[in-house]
Length: 520
Image (cartoon, rainbow, N blue to C red; front, side, top):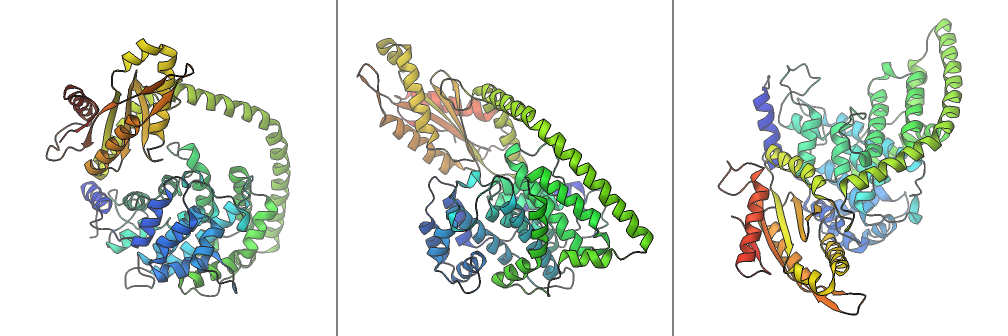
């Protein structure tokens, strides 16, 4: 397939998203990724999920341990933490999804060498990012959605930066930069489609999509540290691939960006460069991938930068100018710190006021509609389901009449907490108005939507709210929902999904309340 039209491109992305033209991750990796999305993930359970694939478990342990130290899978998971162990298993699983040796039309071996180098650089940058204290066994375990710069997440994300190139090579399709025309596939889009198919964490999907454009305005703020780390690691690896572009000034530029974007000290950056070759050889051995003997990037630069004495003097002058500029930048940064903190505080307060319901603390109706349209557009693009669930408290007016509006507010706050405990980090829960709540469940089909709706109804029915007066309030709720696109009715518009879920809710009301109705 020598030329790709825009229609071909959209079709390929759709097929990748559906898994028709995409490789599969090992089942154990998918299981442990799904497990750590939940609250209070247990490293012992994470280890048990991976242990079902002996080869994968052995290599994951090898990645996490030093030579001579051979702990059990469970010990390795406990030391690393459940989420970091899962991310390490993901990195190992990625190398199983594609060939490891060169073929007649694509050099997979060279691509994996480059991916391993990028992964090692990203891990080192994350380990040295300012404010992070996540080294060794003393690292405190965090939830997966808070691991924007966890070294294991950075390493796994960087290892997957080339997913787009790999899947396009697997399909024998041209990508941008390969000399193809305007309809050529963007490897970032192809990689994003595959990452979405595998349900990888959102920050990793952002890194795969935007590592070539880390300043894109569409990147969420919480994903920028990981995107920046992966972009820097990608550029460091590129200097190995293209020695002619390696120079002291190129390294100086990356050093400055690492300090500005991630807070990596200059000394730590240089130590990272010195140790990168050893890291690459160790990780390659742990993954079972053969790579040639690695050279220090500083040696590559020294060899590439041998020039006549006049050029060397010019480089020295540029270094002096850079040092002076760096001193000026440091002074300005100190002056701007206080102002930046004030701006950040105001922006955080503004976002809270704009997007959240002041009574319950969950998202409000305005923010729900903003995310609702974006999520349904994504559902249409990738042909993946999304479910809408509406939850209305039965006879809530009687609570206000019997106990007062202050008591009613306490009940709404309590119910919001009950529902918030039952949504995933990838879902969205909002107070739609009065006693009506709505949940937007991404990548959830009708079966999953019904399970959530019934669990929410049961949880509210079991709720007992103790009021300051000593009275206890019991509740029931009517629930209605639908899954978009509706089965058998592809012509239904995205804007109709909320109306259909609302109609299902009122059917529950008409048929006696305290029940779930799902639109078919």
